[in-house]
Every structure is written in C-alpha cells, then in structure tokens.
Length: 343
Image (tube, rainbow, N blue to C red; front, top):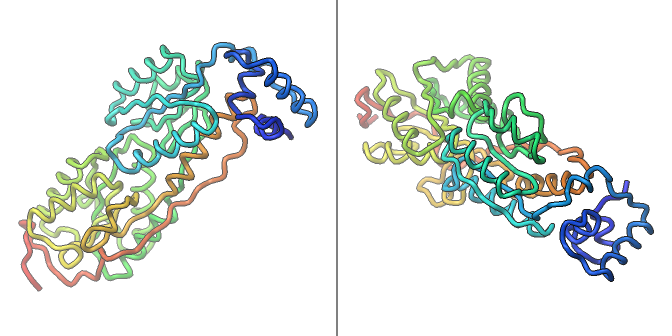
C-alpha cells in the first residue's frame, strides 16, 4: 500500500509539503501542488478524505509531554523525537510535568489551546482523566509509559527479560539479601519493573521481603531517602536494584556520603542507562533502553496518523542488561547503622 512518504519521494518534496497539499491548511505553490498530485496519481496514492477534512487548520506543531526533562532518559528521548519530527516538517512544543498529574493536565490543556496537531506523552501516572479527554481531540502516541484505559498507540521497551536477567545475575554472584528501590506503584513502568524482579527472585529461591522494598517517585531525592531506609534495616541488603537512573544517582550519593563503597560494601544496578554511568568508578551496571529508536518511532507514528495512514504496526523494543563494575559478590558487611564494618 502506498503512503504519503512514497508520494514525497516520487515528487521530490518533504512529507509536510505533501500533507499541506492535500489538507489545504497552508499555502503551497501551484507548481508544487501539481507535481505532488501528479506523483500521487502515478503511484496510485489516494489521500484519506476524512483525515483531510479534519486537518484543515493544521499548525505543523506537535506537543511532547514528559515527566522530567532533567532525567537524561527523557532528555535524549526528546531530542530524538524533535529530530524525527523536524524531518517531517513539524516543530515541537515541550511540557515538563515533574511527575505531577495536575501539571500534566494543565500542559495538555495548553497544547490543545495552542492547536497542536498531535501529542506524544509519557504520563506521570497510570490514571489520567486529562488524557481520556485529549485522545478525543487530537491523535496521541504514548512513549515509554501509558495510561490505563486510554486507547492510543504505545512505543516502549519491554524491560521484563532484562530485569529478570539482572535478578539472576545478582543471585548468581551470591547475594541473598536483595533490596529494591522501585518507582511509583501507580505507574505502569514502576509496577512492571518491581513485579519482574520480585517474580524472578522468588522463582530462584531468593525472595525479597516487603521490608527490603522501598517506593520512590523516580526522582533523585527519593532514591537517597530509600537508600537511607534500606541501610537502617537490621539486616540491610548487600545488593540493590534501583528502578531508574535519577533515583540511582540519589542512592549512590547517599552511599558515598556514608563512606560506603560500591561494590565492595553494596552492589548497585539501575534501570535506564545514561552516558555518565560509564564515567563512574566503578561504572554502573544498568538496563539500557533503545532511547533514540523509540523516539524516532514515536514521532514517525504520530506523523503517519496525522497523514491519515493510521499508526500501523509498532515493533516491540527490548531493554538490554549491560554488566559493568558496580556489582560483585557480597564480600563486605554493612552494619545496621549503615556504616562499613570491614570484612
């Protein structure tokens, strides 16, 4: 089946120019219009009449709403989305929610007021009444996270296999006192990462008790607080899985502030891999998502929807465990007060 991209290639113009030609939303020279229409006829492309009628006021602007722009994962994701959208003639309006449902709702309202053509969003929480309303107004694509009960295409990486692999790796090193710093239970990614880790450790005969699980909010400060609480336990964990990179930074800073060494005293691994993990001493073991590829697919999916072609099939992405130097056998011992006692 031919698509708007095929027309653009045949006519030697951008996808945005083809879209404007058929929608009539913005001026296109008669010479270019004729070339585009001739190319469409030549390859047998028929523009979607309904989509064309709905897009008479397109702005060639997309909204992007993310939970934390200072989180390197979302910074890199935003860059990939912006690059891919620009190729198709779209500019981006960015909203940063700080993991707040209220702020997210306000940004979504503002984007609709600005008449964006579509929105890519990573919801702050799984429950989002605002998103329920937005999907009826403009095309929406979810990136990394999704909202319960909201029907929209989703671009994300499955971390289940990599998290299970990490659990097995830590147990294989000899760790029996495992701890988890999880994301919020009311986010899909927070639930999935915790469930995968707990399920695998249980199946391997090293269950993680509820007392060694702490729930953070995906931000640095909550990672530090969670690590403080884990270290205060009578029998603190010898290895900790942290559910995102921002909380991992907080956890590492807490360990350093207490004079504890990684991995000699506590092994640490994180979900999400960022460039500076390689610069740490030791480099941090992490689960990496194909961030750039995810961003490109999200932008291209939304562009197809806006062109009236539908989202199409979105191939699933897989996260990958990258083993570095931050995990080792539990040779050290951490006292109940959270300080190093030696060997």
